[in-house]
Image (tube, rainbow, N blue to C red; front, side):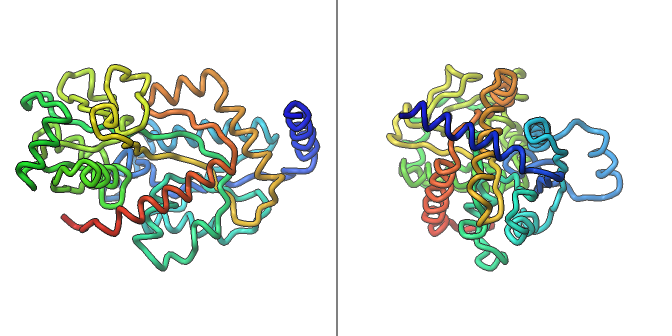
Length: 340
C-alpha cells in the first residue's frame, strides 16, 4: 500500500511538472546581505559598506539561498530569481509574499524569528504569518551553542547553573539581539534550569561573539554556525549544545539536556513558504524537489560543515514545527523584559 501511494505521488508530481512552472519563480529574501541577525550582524549601511558587501563572500544565509536557487531552477526547469526585500525586521519581505498571488511563483525564504517571533513582538505587521503563509519545506536547522571565553575558569553546565541559582543576576549572557533564536534559547534555559541570568543583547551574532571573546560578558548563546570559525584559535569554549542531539562537527560536546536540564531542546531553522491557498499540488512538488536536494551528499556535507543540519520532511511536518515554535516562543516572550 505504501509503495502504491509513493508511486501515485511520484506520478502526480511528474504530471504537474508539465504544467508548472511555465515562467520564472521569485524567491523573496527578507535579510540584508550580511545575513540573518541570528547568524551575522547588521552594520550601519553607507556607500563604503555596500561596496564591501558586493566584494565580500556571501553570508551564510545567502549561501543557503544560492543552494536552494540552483536546486529549484534545475528541478523546475525555470529561472529562480532571488529578490531582496529588507525592512522592519524582515516584515517587508514576509508581507510581500503573504499578499502575493497564490500561484507558486512567489516564495519566501525565512528563518524562525521571521515567522514565529517577530509577528508576536509586532502585533500589527500587516499579515498573519500562520494564516497568510503556507509552509512548503524546512531546509536547515540551526543549532545554538552555549559558549564562554577559553580564558575563563573552567566550569561545566551544572557549576554555572548552581552559581546562577546561588547568586541571582551575577552571570550575564550575550545573544544576537532581542527576539533572536539565541536570545529566546537563553531565556528558555533560564526558565527550565532556574539559572537567573542577565541578558545582554547585541546587534547580531558576530558582535555577541566578540563580547564573549573580550570577556565583556561571561556567556553567550550563539548559533554554532557563527562559533565554528573561532574554535580553531582556542579562544572560545563550547560548554553545551542547546539542540536535542549533538552536532556531527562537535560530536564531543554534550547537549544541555544530557548535561542535566532534562527535555531541553532549542534551535533555529530556515525554510520555504508560499502564500496561503497555494495549490497543495504545487506545495507537494516544491517540497519534493527541496527534499530531493537535501538527500544529496554534497548538500548535506556543506550544511553540516557550516554548522547547520539538513532538515528534510513533509510540508505538514514543517507546519506543525512552525505552530509549535510559535506557541512555545510566545510563552517565553511573555516573561521577557526587552532593552537590557
